[in-house]
Length: 267
Image (cartoon, rainbow, N blue to C red; front, side):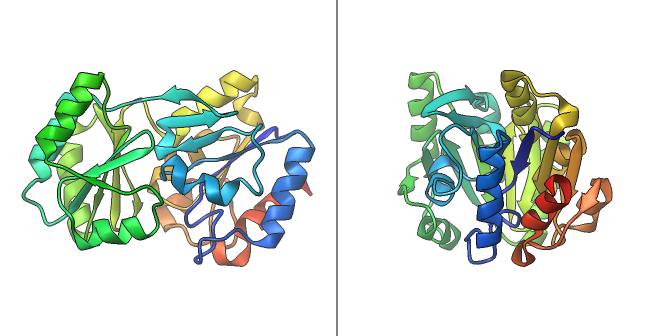
């Protein structure tokens, strides 16, 4: 019997128009009524998750944001993992001459050092305004607060993002978690922050065994959690590499892939 379902958002729970299908909504509500833990697990910050999930995910359910580095439950943050400032500075220095947009997400705030077309595109779908500041000023703020970003996101042309991914992995493998969430977006986190570690943390909190979990995702930042879960589910729109590690492949996000997977496992 499965007791928890962890579901990625973009490309998975959400259709291309960023909505949840009615069929999926009904299933999510039914599972929660039966006492199943239903957890959104996203690279998005909380303010990009809650307006979408609140109508169908009750406050009793945790919400995993920023790729596992910032977890909300019943109005409180129960887990936060930040990137050490020495690594933040190193990543910035390595990328400052690249034609890419670099964004820093800290709790419910986000920062950038330049106002670019890609930053403006992100702003259109983000309810909290971006703070454009010189990098040194951002770092000094965090240093004074003994804080740091939960996530660095690098956006740009897919070919360039792949090159940057290789470059950062060569420099920071073992120190940082580095994954693509989409071909145009690279996510950089503390090595202890990932969707997999978020699942490990939450099932420990709720007394659930790994074998009793399902994880559903569509991209490279979902790979670890798909492998880790008792049943790892890849979406029909996932890359072949992600499908190859899954226990079950469902339909696409625009063809009720999440609903079809839940119906398969829960009847």
